Length: 284
Image: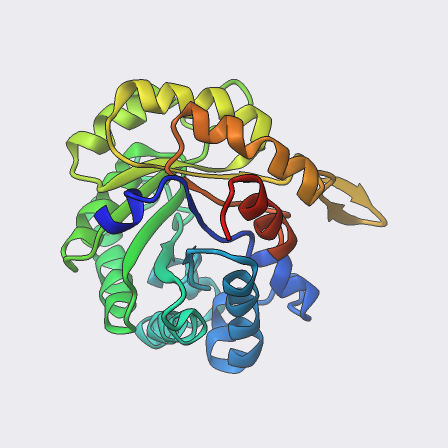
């Protein structure tokens, strides 16, 4: 983490889900299972981001906790799916990028008593161990709305000994769906031992610039920021993101100046968005 954050800003990757849909993933299919059934396509996505200039790429494991995989009858393949996801991204990265493995929310809320904290923590620990076994260089806990779930994922992931980034999703109004402000998230996740914190998804790049300033004002940790390519519009029943690579890249300097250490993209962003970002930030 120190080596990466010394090179400010570090360029991360872009969206994975939209890239998989473009390669044939059907609505309702389990994206994470493609690590076992469509490894070549997963590696193609990872390699496209490396070729575009990403210094850090993620893994196709966003929904690969036991809790989420159970919805597809795949809970007993949790370790296998996560280990394969990390191995695929490591192959694509080679010596050209680091791999920070993705852990997303389970879809179950502790505050609503939909799942107990012990069960949730155990699920995250199982996933994190498998990602570590697969060779991940770090872990990104991302798209979190509930601080308790984020803290439990952080605790579990830290047991691997890998650096852990924790990102919340701040919606319109500048708070998470559960009402958490950027300042509160920054303070509490810093105190909980995160190696870096940040925000991903939820909004386009313009909306994340002030949120990044708020995060920076409340912590000295590196900040990981991955905005969407704007708000999608439905075209012929399918979501289309309207922020072009050049428009996205034009705003990355403002994101850097707001305090972002890692800059990438979330929903709707592509290798072209990453390539344009590298140019805008003066990366080779």
